[in-house]
Amino acid sequence: MSTLAFIVPGALNRPTGGSRYDRHMVEGLQAAGLEIDVHSLGGQFPTPDQRASQAIDGCLTRLDDGQWVLVDGLVLGGSPKAFAAHAQRLHFIALVHHPLADETGLTPTRADALKDSEALALTLAQGVIVTSDFTRRRLDQLGLYQQAVHVVPPGVEPLALRPARNESMLHFLCLGSLIPRKGQDILIDSLNTLKELPWRASLVGANDLNPAFANACQAQINAHRLEQKITLTGALDDDALKRLWATTDVLVLPSRYEGYGMVVTEAIARGIPVITTDAGALPDTLPPKAGICVAHNDAAALADALASVITQPDRLHELTQSAVSARTGLNSWSEQVSDFKNAIRAIQTHG
Image (cartoon, rainbow, N blue to C red; front, top):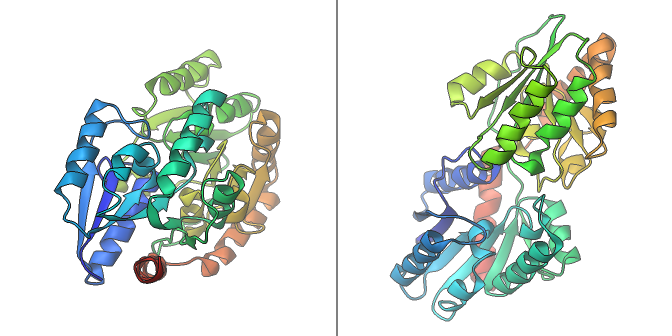
């Protein structure tokens, strides 16, 4: 396999699931001896602003004829014309984390425009890699790409079990960027109905991707007078996050949509049960009996699930033991990197 160019939106160390996936694949492939040139583009995606458009054009123009180019779908899907201009001399492989039109909060007109744009962009690719079987099915359902795709889910790093806890006050961790799709507003409403019970919650994630939503979440906490029970931490570094995981009883992911939900796997790897929703790939990602799955956008159902683990210690113990048992079924990043490498080779050989 010759040198592979990899075009990504922003820096690989961005605190998002997509960027973590991209980073793990780059580091794993490099460790296996492959040469990868990462091109981190500035600007706004998936609808490129001027800075992003110039970055795409400049990057593609500098690549040599015949170059194989892996492109994160957040860049490719919104810029089909820019990539079409180079499709006769470059070979594109699309990496799709989830369809762009499935992002939460889009108007129907905007969703249709993104769907058309991404469908056109994917026709330029020699092959497509997705991060979940759900996303594979979703591409077909939306008519975005109806040929065979390669499915390579995320892996997980070997992680020690969370230390045993015997605290009367449960600690809920919600880990994800503060954007509408992650559903922190639903969680805050749910917790507001349980304010008399013994719990505290940490909502961890970047607050600069959608400042208006992040500010609204803080205002929501203030309005409910939950400042002493819910903390918005912003993004945390690895050490701080590791310390927080060690005090976590339950991961809560109230998302309105996920193309996979890497943080679910990261919780299970630590033996921590999960309360999440039925949105997108989440029912597939959550191992059976290792957590509770409720309807998305349903604050009452989420509140019931949260109350059950607060008020029923046996229920929490049962879920925790199931999460510990499920650890043995998780795939390592090294296994997934190997599958990713094989997918690239298959595309380069057969298209």
